Amino acid sequence: MTVAFTRRDALNEPLDLAGIGIGPSNLSLACLLESVPEVRSRFFERRDAFDWHPGMMMPGVELQSSFLKDLVTPVLPTSRWSFVSYLVAHKRLYAFLNANYDAVPRQEFARYLAWAAKGVAGLRFGTEIRDVEHRDDRFVLRFDNGQEEARNLVIGTGSSPFVPDWAKPYLGADCFHNSEAKSRLRDLGAGRIVVVGGGQSGGEVVEALLADPGSMTELTWISRRHNFEPINDTPFSNQVFSPEYVQAYLKLGGEQKQAALKNSILTSDGLSISTIHAIYRRLYALRYLEPDTLNAALAPNRDVIQMERNGHAYRLIVRNQFDGGIEVLHADAVVLATGYRFQLPDALASLGERIVLDRNGYPMLNDDYTMQWTGPRANRLLAQNAGRYSHGIADSQLSLMAWRSATIVNTLLGRQHFDAEPDNAQLAWATETASAMPHQLRAGYSDGMLSS
Image (cartoon, rainbow, N blue to C red; front, side):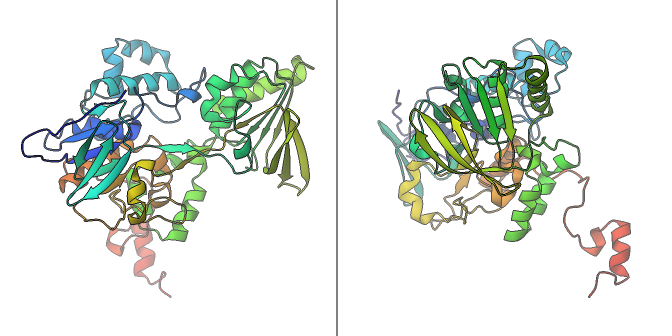
């Protein structure tokens, strides 16, 4: 389905903002902009309707962040598009509260997002942007049947499944990324299955396979990490999902950012405790209570070197990083829980040479989420969910999407419409000036203890 667009008025004025892609991030921005009528915006999505990670929506999967970190609540708690408003609108607030969830079912949050996408103004589904050109003082977005113009663009197309080079030649019905797991696993019919990737996505695939093995007789789960580790979900660790941490992170140099990102990786990429318990208990039952029904093996510290066809099956050459040994795995099917990577949409190809990229292939972002590009400063290119390296670990998560959207709105307006200032920090991340230091730290500073 395609939609034709015409100019809105006789003045031929462009939109103030056009959004490419409608995922949670741009949906959050659209919800906040509802309270800012002076910004004329529209968001475009090639899919016919909002659908959040449908291929990963397996039974029992849970959200790894609080439901209060929704589209709007952290910056506009009175918005009608909050998760609590969704529960009230569907007359199940009390039932939800009484369920006393340790973690919200991801299916529930997906329904909340779809509910908001059906109600908020300015969203255009079934509209694929084929090309974007910068002309004079505006961007021109071309569709199959018409065009739209805007002074500013925000990219919210999300991350794309990452497939390692060694697996790319074999993608198909029995070798696929976990983003397709829900539809693929049901009819897989494989005896020997290898799951690659030790994060939450890999854990959810393994949990689903163990719960409904079908014709599977062997399951091997391999990970590059030194163990199958839980998400670091403690109060102090979760401070990295806060505006104050982002502001401290932005002041770091390149190598410092890389080190900080590495140190905080398990705050977002670890396994939920419930997933770990479910898998371990099922493995216990298979080993001690139901022997000979399924052979399951977990193998951390493994790095796939090569994959090749072996008749109708696969052979994986794997290096054991723990002891340096080389191993060979045989599989009838391979599931790749190998993560996601941000990439600019194809529609921006004509602007590609004008956009500055970092060494990871991500757009270079300024602190306010504007891309560095060679076009006029009055025409901003903004990116959502693209600042993992520039803004920290939280940028690829749901946790700060409302705060980031508020920051983008403030950037567009040139004033602080939303209060995006950080809370009082529980942790002192950055080195402060002497006047701002806590007494214990300031004493050492004033006594010359920190001087050379």
